Image (cartoon, rainbow, N blue to C red; front, side, top):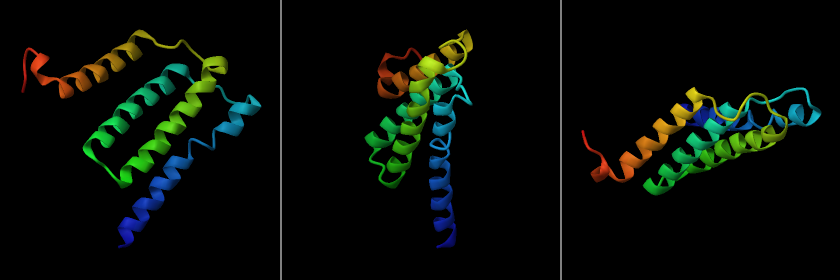
Length: 114
């Protein structure tokens, strides 16, 4: 019983960490790195869609909060963030993630299926 309660508490604290950054962004004390938050937003969205497709129940709430947090930090970074939107390395990470999603959804289109 106790590990379940502790794990749930840790999840809530983890989800709230995104929202602690917003006052700093609004005050101009921090500037988020665009590419990092874009990648977190995209990968989190992929994870959330997979959870929804598989019928996850309780984890969906936490995934929604985490994706919402990542997107809510990425959106203002478009105007006041640091760095470029995607470096070559960032584009490769997103490309690999999208390839894995495509291979999972349509395995018959892959030339080698494991």
